[in-house]
Image (tube, rainbow, N blue to C red; front, side, top):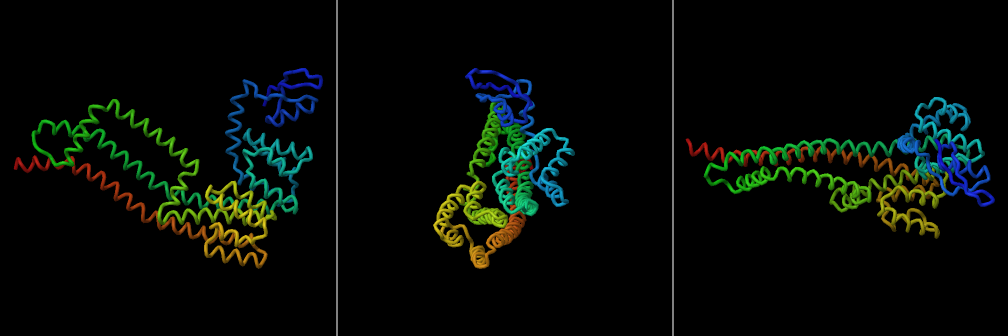
Length: 399
């Protein structure tokens, strides 16, 4: 990858040079090695598209797969450098090849593995860097990687169950909405033209539906583009709403669902915190790391709890004061504090609530899906009945 660097020499002369580097950090390092100060670094024009493609591909690198392969090689007796060299030799993806090359280059320069990972924050989150850093102090990197793999797989398992439970209702909504719009936008205007010259009084609901059909038929050239733009704006708003945490806040306020969302958030908190504590990270550092992966509501309570714990308050007491426990998790936290196995108890609490969440999702989908199908059937059926009521009325008069 080529970068254009505007640099300042020791005698204050501005020069421009082109360097081959893995990324901007590497380009800056090469420039400073020449005794120059890099004022600005930009990718070469012909390499700009390649840089964008490289970033998109590197973000798609599976952290779990990388950890599994690295764990297998470390368990086989290879050193960290030898393991990365082996992964580099078999890698065919250019973006992942560059990531591994940067890791190897940093290790060969004498840097710690956690520091090399921290130089690529778009790929390696603080949680991953934290467990690697703790493993470096205990020389137990394979066990820490195995712990992270188990943690990520459990998180992905719960997330996949939630997504799977949403797929079928979304398909029903799309199909039902499509049929409804087809009836209202195409079929109803045609029936409205047929009934226009009948000269008979129609039921109120049928008349309202046919009035809508006449309006849609005469303004179709404006109606459908308007609906398309409104749908696009709605999707954009929903994406922003979900990204900013608005969906989670709205779900928390729903009766019955809000408590389950809270339990899910606490389960993720316990699982992450337990993994960090079992990896040897101090409790305050673990709490600070966890704050980056929880919702805004849990984060505010967690910040207060962290300050309370720093003043000498036990974890169970601080969590109770900030509504970060349930009756079962509170008992398990107290047991962990007495036995010195707090991390293990947090992990067991998460396991207990993961099972409860899975069972609730199964019950919810079995109840919600038939109700959704019935609601869609009622809407479509009501439109059809209202369309055919004038026909029945005309048939009765003819007979």
